[in-house]
Amino acid sequence: MSSRADLLRGLPHRRAFSLAWPAILSNITVPLVGLVDTAMLGHFSDATHLGAVAIGATVIGAVTWLLNFLRSGTTSLVGRALGAGRTDTAVTHLQRSLLMALALGLSIVVVQWVAVPLAMSVLAPEGDVRAFATDYALIRLLAAPATLLTLVANGWFVGSGDTKRPLAVVATVNLLNIGLDVAFVAGFGWGSQGAAAASAIAEWVGVVVAGVLWWRVAPAPVREAVRRWRGKGLRSGWAGVVKLNSWLFGRTAILYVVLTFVTAYAGRIGEDVLAATSVLMQFMYLASYAQDGYAHAAEAMAAREVGRRDVREFHRANLAAAVPAVTLGAIFTLLYLVARDPLLALMTDLPAVADTAREYFPWVIALPLFSAFAYLFDGVFLGSGHTRAMLVTMALSAVVVFFPVLAIGALWIGDDRGHDLWRAFLLFNGARGFFLGLAYWRTTRRGGWLEHEEPARV
Image 1 (cartoon, rainbow, N blue to C red):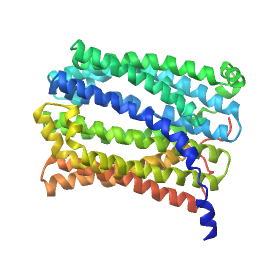
Image 2: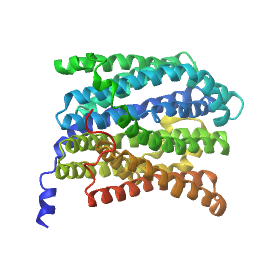
Image 3: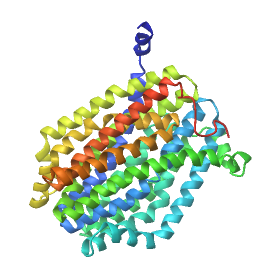
């Protein structure tokens, strides 16, 4: 009993908060861009452009979601290396990630001209929605190299326990995006193409800002280590890094399939349901990105303590992040409960879209609180390097919960396909937290937190 009391005494709440609040602010600006896109198109365009952006954004999600391992993998590897006092190893991980980001980004620019039209033939019905969605994705993906390089830079910052500079980077990108969005969509009337151009320009500015900030704060030994691109450490050790990131990629691929399915399924129900779903998903993203602030704090603290091989402080850091993470979810649930109509009015004045969104809004109200543990445990498992467990639990959530619940709703409940869809999505997010919590308990019980899926040294 006394040992448990000692574990809870003096938890690092202050450190968790110092890491979380910049991450919360920077994360909130990410869905704000989508909110502004939706609001501009909802007020100054029509449901066709609104639906086109919803579908086009799923292709962009294939880059930012599937390749987000460049950020999270860098954070995990760099954080544990720095926690163990191995600066050269941390820099080598950064170099590998930069090379991967550049190669992947340039490849995307080359293959998008074939891949995007093929993807749209599956995601969108033939007509104006497909044409506008294709243009939107092609314009956005011109900034793929910048987007991926910025992910790596932010991964280094979070891994080193610095969440303020990612705030500066993301805030710069998204505030510029918002300003250009207003000018291009509301001012020039360019519709979905204008929204895409605003995002692409902002991403290229963002990678420059990230590079300048990194160089300004990097100590001289770190700068010198970065210059040694042809060192032996950089040429070897790729297998372990690829293995760790492959689990992350698989986990994120499953999540992306579910999110894409939600949009595609809504589109098959009807254009108004698709447009309403794009509005509602922005509220989901707003809450989830805010809650990810404490997930980032847990990620940074977990990586450091695992690097230091201090399991006791690892658990204490996770406890310090858990309470505010759940509280934040409850705050968003309460906000959505009391401010539904004003929030929807900000997003669109299209009557059919607003009415449809209002019908399904109760599911959005429940999502932040229902998803809190999923986001928190994501950070813990990312930081500790246990990415295989993330893949397994995501697969279970999709295969055992999401798709069966959707099928049961469609076949036996059958009240409304939109309600069937949102019910399955809510339970999917709850299952993610449950299965990750179970994996946390099992890993703790067998003393496995210091076991890694990649070499500790390079």
